[in-house]
Image 1: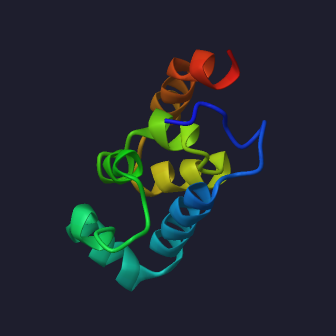
Image 2 (image 1 turned 90 degrees about the vertical axis):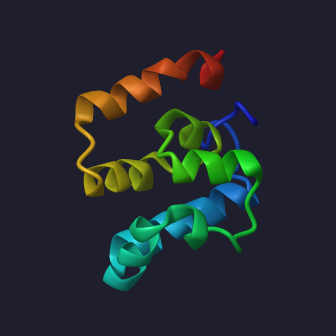
Length: 101
């Protein structure tokens, strides 16, 4: 896993693809329904690494952040899932050392 996040580097192609999926799921009710019905099936054809697939299908907030997902898109996704802000922040703090050294 790449431990450098979007603050330090230009996001990777994979980070862009993950962000695009999250944006689509947040802004299109049909896509939202399809995604939440079966996340693994929804991303089956996406050009993502195994780690990205796992992080997205399991809503691993810290891993998604480390993979370069924009934190604003990630937070909106967590709001959509009704993840409490304290849990979102705790997940980011848990990977802070990996992200910033």
